[in-house]
Amino acid sequence: MKLLGGLLSPFVMRAVLVARLKGHEIPVEMPEGGLRSEAYLRLNPFGKMPTLLDGDFALPESAVIAEYLDEVLEGPRLLPDEPRARARARLLARAADLYVAPALTPIFRAREVPEAVPAARESLQTALGQVERLRPAGAPHAAGEHLTIADATLMPVFFFLDAFESPFGTATILAEAAPGLAAWWKAARQTAHGARMVEEMGAALAAFMAPRS
Ligand SMILES: N[C@@H](CCC(=O)N[C@@H](CS)C(=O)NCC(=O)O)C(=O)O
Image (cartoon, rainbow, N blue to C red; front, side, top):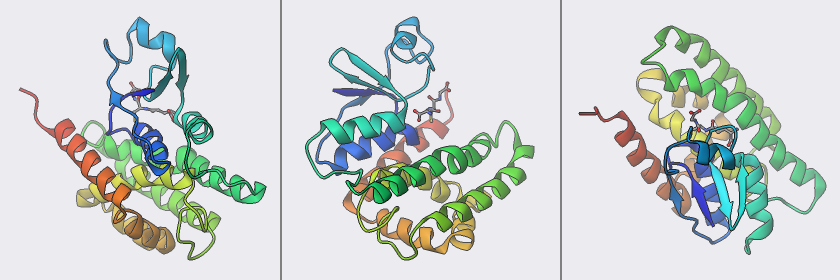
């Protein structure tokens, strides 16, 4: 098995974390020829990362990859058996995909389109407040009592809230709009998997930001 993509992508890191939380390492590499090559588009017609390769089976879309890995890899289940707990884990992950991550995109692109940042900060505040309302108050993990795919989805997205605190105040928005989530993230980034992820994504972000000669 391998993942095509790079570790700076929160979508790639979601799949990596699902595997790690189940006790597995999946190698990650950029596709030869890039995301727009004919060869890659045959595996993933969206031209986005990640794509999971499992033998001759190519699977795009990180949310689907996360559930597939949960099913095929040995280890603790990250989608609970109980239907309501399973639905809540999926709901938190979906809210991150549909509302939180898109609010961060204009902040990531602030150098090109600075005028989009104020609206993005507002959308981020709204989205984080909405996700906070979906969580059981005081839950130790993203969606409740147990680690689920929601943790693997939210952790890489929240890396960027810390990374963009200066100059965009994104960690402050989290602390003010969603104090419960802020407490969850503070604990999550101190776990072994969280600290490793922060280090890897930090290195990837520094490389991405470095001036190219
Ligand atoms: N819905 C997709 C989103 C993947 C996505 O947007 N990946 C970005 C990196 S964070 C990407 O590949 N961007 C490259 C591009 O669009 O050219 C998933 O969950 O896998």
